Amino acid sequence: MLHKEFFRFLIVGGVNTVVTLSLFEGLRRVAPYLLAYSVAYVTGIGVSYVLNTSFVFRRRKTVKTAALFPLVYVAQYLLGMLLMWLLVDRAGFGPTASLVIVIVISVPLTFVLSRTVLSLSRESVK
Image (cartoon, rainbow, N blue to C red; front, top):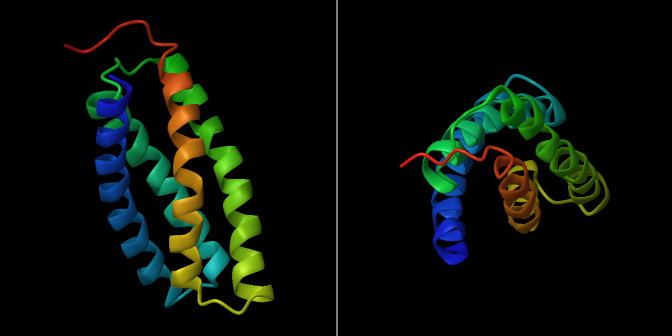
């Protein structure tokens, strides 16, 4: 079951990445890269919650999980901001390449934390 969930998580992650990257690229043209990253990131949390509850872990959406789910992304966000800064400002990578690196590093952490939080909803969706 864990392998199936992780495979579905990767699919959702791919969809969310396309949405987030597209938004980031659009915003980066008119805003500083860290602001663009932040807006795209928050949007991605909403997309992720909906898709992870419905498709990946097949859990009902509850007030409790909806309130706790963004906390998964606090850790990922802080890690992402640090990595973006290090990669762009210190290592000289471009913002887009840096975002891709941040996403690749964040996936395992996000899977474990998402699974943990959404398991608090005992009701499965059939």
